[in-house]
Image (tube, rainbow, N blue to C red; front, side):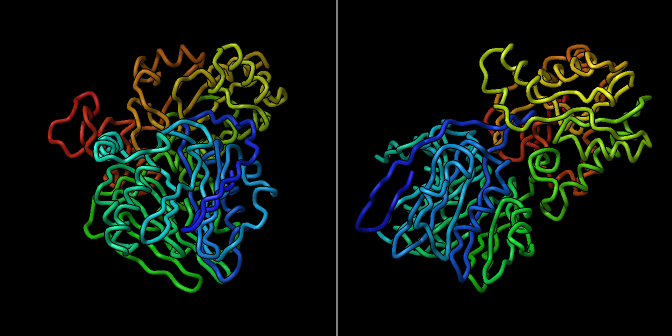
Amino acid sequence: MRIRQDREAQDIYLGESSRLRLFHMTGPKHSCGVVGMYAAYNVVPSVHKALRIIQHRGQESAGISVFKEGGILTVKDSGLVQVALNRRNMEGLEGLCAIGHVRYSTTGNKGAVNAQPLFVQTTNGMIAAAHNGDITNYTELKKKYLDAGWSFLTDSDSELLTKIMGKHMTQYNDPVKAIRSTMNELDGAYSLTVLINDRLFGVRDPYGFRPLCLGRVDAGYVIVSESAAIDALKGDLVRDVQPGEIVEIKSDSFKIYPAPAETPRAHCMFEWVYFARPDSVIDGREVYSVRRRIGEILARESPAEVDCVMPVPDSGRAHALGYSIQSGIPYEEGFMKNRFVERTFIMPDQKDRENAVSMKMNPIKSTVKGKRILLVDDSIVRGTTLSRLIRMLREAGAKEVHVRIGCPPIVAPCYYGVDMKTRDQFIANQHTLEDIRAAIGADTLGYISAPGLVEAIGMPASDLCMACINNRYPTNIPGETHRFQSKLNPDFV
């Protein structure tokens, strides 16, 4: 989908949408990744490259918006970056400042209509925005503006926040004031890259749920969800965007607009456990080091008498390595992974899902047969994939299969940008530890403790959002327990 947007014209060319063929992610599904770049040269190839580096954050659609010749030109479509932003669609797309987005839907449907960046025209110029996170007061805000006569083309919270920003830009004709006024209306999680005419901004919500960092590249600056993209562009990480900050970047400088008030931090612990690339640094903590430390603490908290330690690839690798180092038990690769298989969770039939797991993973028999195996994974949501993997190991000749998990049991929904919305989808909410062990077919089962996870991340528990494991939320969610209430549900204290 190619869209030309400026004051005089809005010409739309619909590109050929591709059928989604997406990689299966065994853990919880994340929402999105964003990037923005300003340089003294055409930044589009670099933004495209950065999007491919953060592709793991969303595989349903991708898009780029660039300021060029007095207008904003947007290319976006369904599919992976190299499909949605193919050579034909990208022809002639160039400029000194641009933003980009990769999407996994948590609010709004999966169609190309909800692909980002999203655009709004105001009397004081144009706005394009890319959003990672979930707006928790979306329903009440949308009703407020529908009652005021507004119309919406999508069911995405990102369209709502973009239009609210447009309202404030019309009112103030000041990009920073427009963004800050929009933030005052929003609750929840949002890391944004925003083009307002030819000015480029990065925005992080006051709690800092989702990551966002600033990097210096050759003759320019970049704002992006993960620092691995800065490394790929041969740049240097300058700093994390702090919660509540607005950052404006140009090719030769950046300016920080600090948060007007300090808010308790709520960095999503799952960024370190599962979501982010291991080579990224998030809020001063290298993801790989945290995951390896998780494995070390797992070995300390939940030892096992086994012959070898094996990961569920790829997300369990650093956890398993840490367990092996701490325990002194040899590390082995137990599965060969096929990365070109559709995601199992989009398949409606259980038999189809199990067949897909068989196509995706195949045991390496020489490392499995006759062994007592400790299998390490990042998390358990439903347990269906892990159950199938354990059966495969036994069929390949494993004597015993013990399981260790690098995240405490997930028991509560996420409202901040992770596709875990209802309690009935969590196996730990309905079963005891022994029930889960029996259900997945493991000889033993152990999770890292919540204090162990906090120790591994290396920041105070008060700076982390751990609501999905302790049922205590950092913002006011109707019907849920706020983490600063004096009386908490005793089941989760």
